[in-house]
Length: 109
Image (cartoon, rainbow, N blue to C red; front, side):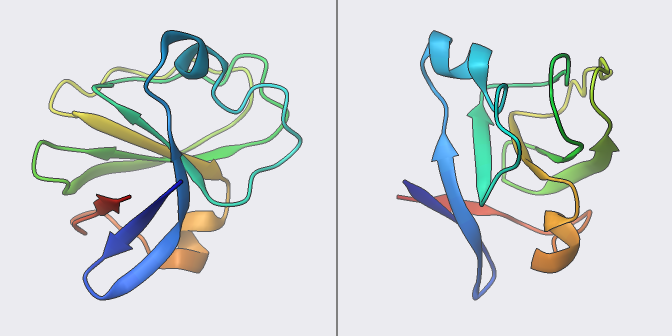
């Protein structure tokens, strides 16, 4: 398990999905999510088969949030070519954490 940190604030716990099977499954089959999932080396996501809406943050190579979107279930998203990492959480999580466009996020083990 890892932690998402922005400045001096710990935002949430996170699972880093690196394996092919982990990445393919993501949050599918879950009815909700505590914390977040992180997709390293990722530029786009989908919510096909999801049971709940997602907050999605796209991070550049420096960990800066370059785009934040809310994704409803059963949608395809447009790739964000400048992104290097994607963070997903249950809709409403980013507002609770205070995560916004332009913030820098560090992923700590």
